[in-house]
Amino acid sequence: MSDTPARHARRGLVIPFAIVGLLLAAWTGWWLWLADQIETRLADQTEVLRAQGWQVSHLPVSVSGWPFRTRVAFPAADIVAPSGHGVAAPELVAEASAWNPGHWVVLAPDGLILTRAGKGQVAVEGEALRLSISHLRDRFPDLRLELARPTFTPVAGAEPFPLASAERIELYTRPHLTDGQAATDEMDVLFRLTDGRGRAGGPVEGATREGRLSAEVEATIEQASRLRGVDSAGVFSSWTAAGGRFTAVKGRLQAGDSTARIESAALRAGPDGRLEGHLALTAERPGEAIAGLASSRSGAVDRVGATGAAVAAGVQGERPMDLTLVFREGRTWLGPFALAPAPRLF
Image 1 (cartoon, rainbow, N blue to C red):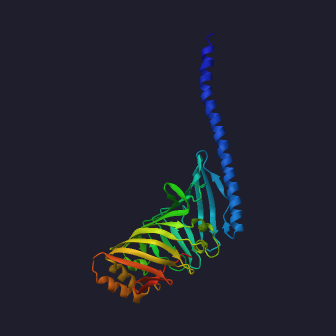
Image 2: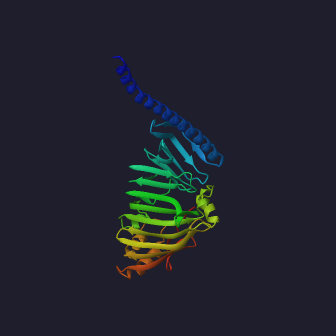
């Protein structure tokens, strides 16, 4: 009789450990299955991209992170779209929680190289370079691109890059909501640049008077599904051909001491890929930014037109002004003055 309580006590200690062991075995089985699925789908997707004209190369992929994460490492990654735009990095890392494999964060811990079709490459480094992707089963996933204190250095032989550095660059996209419901083929986009510094002698440095450029712009993209078609002309080409537009454009700019609120009902790209449409500005001290643009050493700036616009704006002094930028014929116009080429989408 004296041994019975001891056996029951030992059994009571063993049962919790057995339960934990079973749960750990089940979770490990789930994690191994998930890791295998990730590797299989990555291999399949890589072949699909290559069949569509993409160039994709990397050293053998490794999957780690047990028990609570899945971490996929792509050493020596090099990805180039049919349009010629691409990205390369010593290593790209994609991470997700094992219990939420629908939300991924892609990191470039050692920086990356951006390839601009026809313009060359730019080395990008920073405290953090990350892309977050969630709601993968939705028509348009949520995307969040964040660059913390990035620097931009053109590779030898490449065209200059507008920015030398920034405190932060962010880009967010999500499905457009109408009465709380996702619209059929529309997507919201928000771009935010904080304390950007232009390259020496470039238009950004000129417009800011060697100060800093900050911008926050949001818009709705119509015909958003056509942005998925990446061909030799670029992602915006098929979107434009389908009637794609940026609508409900609004935001705020600050270039040195000059500030402006911007608004446009609709903007689109022309056959040459350059922006077309009207952009209304309510500006404070715009003359300083325009004069700085006129003094820029950038060959892209029409210095005669910018000088004329600066003189016209200077007549108003420091009073707020309502201005309209017009993008037409491949140029950016302020009244009768051509300032520079219109922004190019493809």
